[in-house]
Length: 353
Image (cartoon, rainbow, N blue to C red; front, side, top):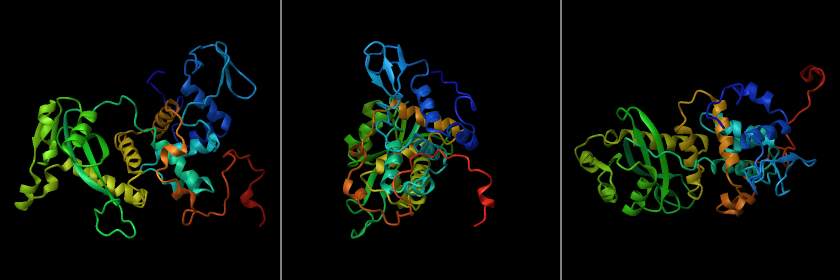
């Protein structure tokens, strides 16, 4: 598919376009068909391009005679909620500047189960890391931080199981005041093996890496990177502002913490923190986009290109989501059959009460 997309043709320009385009489950399915097979049907089993639609809504391959649906083998495989609900979640997830929490998704879409809303959002987070994405280049600041929130019964801000060690890298373009792309990763420790492994996986060889004086960064020069060290401890002893030494990466760390506290009320467990960091990376690296509809399209592209994500793949501790979520009851039970709604006769708001 060409990389040139036009607003109002290939993706909705606004929420008005979105509601008009995807008012039915059939329209959503047709859009996924176009995204998955833009040049015509290709059998996922044998690669044959010949096929036809059959009565159950699937395609039958003329080569191997196997049947497949548009959603089979994608994020939407074996979905339980209708596509109109899924598309609404994708739109909110992609276009909301600060994202959307599972609680907000449950409330806005009238989903009776908090667990259902949480799983839908988390499945979307699982597709955000694009395979083969470009490595960070140029000047890159790198630092670590402890990120997490309070847990009952654990004292101390850095108690085990309470906060996670996260390494953050961000490009500095034309100085630290102009930031480029970022990468964030939960690490088991701050050893040289963990830190250099992260840098080799995310930075272009030969990039200039600016770090503090922690010994875990010492092997960088031998790995082919230009390593510049700023000594934050010495600066602190002199009474200087240590944040000014690595301003770009410290700004990203501050923004991540603020986002987790604001959108998700700080209620992110270490087991799932990486998924939220992937979401933040997706948003930060696309913060200059002026087209919410294009972000919606990009997220759907990632979803149809991704393998199915099962419940066991995203839930670290299943029993936690099987128990009722505090305040989850909204007077609604079960999943909405669809967001398709018939046009009401007359004007309902003028009917006598």
